[in-house]
Length: 173
Picture 1 (cartoon, rainbow, N blue to C red):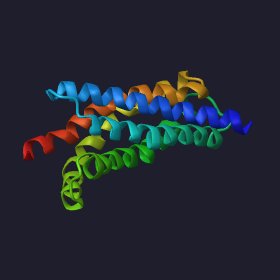
Picture 2: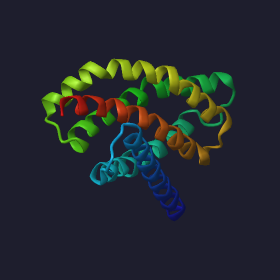
Picture 3: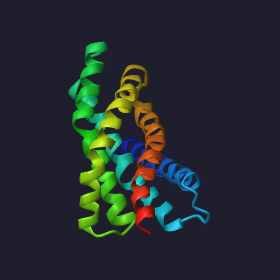
Picture 4: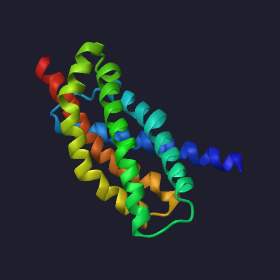
């Protein structure tokens, strides 16, 4: 039982890390970076592997526990609402802080100002995008595929966050 859990957990972490790397490669290409920034790529992959994959794994397990056996549109709506009011704000803020402090190596004061300035618009955009993804995920995806689906869509979202985070760093450089 534990070994099955561990394999599932590690595979989701690795998948999230690889998808995060793909999103960063795409973001680097879109933003016009000529030479691959390998350090940045590896740090984004680390974020996916060490944080977003495991977080998604436990989030979906927790949702399954909270709403055990309950189905239907009302339950799906409650899951989406709970996710959007708890993990969505946290994940977006945490990514912004991680990107600024770890990936870009900026001082806390600059990161704090960036978060204060950009976080509200990022979170409002997230609330326009992620509820639809959450609905599809909770309504149509079996539990064992929810993290994979979420990680795939999150890799697309990360391109947006990556470009948003990068835009200020490039302007100041």
